[in-house]
Image (tube, rainbow, N blue to C red; front, side, top):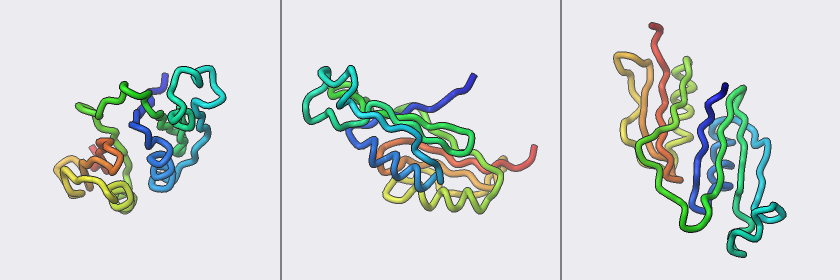
Length: 136
């Protein structure tokens, strides 16, 4: 089994995933639009070019997303996507990249459990955490 975060957007999924591709140093492996799909006639004309599904590969991990159909988008609440690593320098790089244009809840800092930890919401409204754990 694999657990994969699936992010929903209000029309800016493609922009968000281009941002994540660069910041996370990943590769978009598939981007499907409503246009040309069996769902094409179920969305308004202005929505046909929106993302029906996108897959971003980061190492051996995946992040999925889509533009929620009109009237179905809900702002994320009660969740965060956690980026976990062991290198403090990588935690600092990711923090700088991912918080650009977003809102920081907790600055990147050392905690009793982590060399570096931060919480923030990116410029697309997605809540994130960076955790660079200390050895247990």
